[in-house]
Length: 80
Figure (cartoon, rainbow, N blue to C red):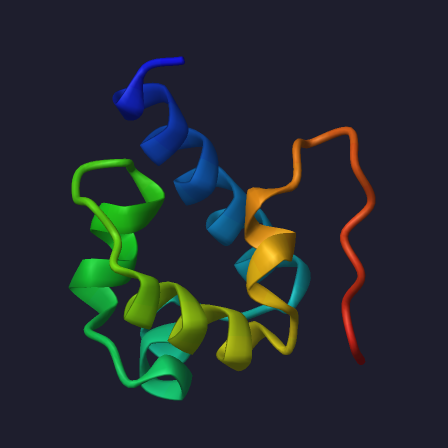
């Protein structure tokens, strides 16, 4: 498992969940207290994400942090 691949996978998961919630990068960033530019870089796997940022993103998406690590074929539980 390469670190770059995992960064990309988590970034794609964040983007997918953001899309499901009909949020722009700007809106997710606002809800999470993070820059929309940072959200975009995360989604593209360009930056390492801290645990603090993952917690903020998960909270903004109303999911648990472990949901961000689930594989694509595992069901994600969204609290709507």
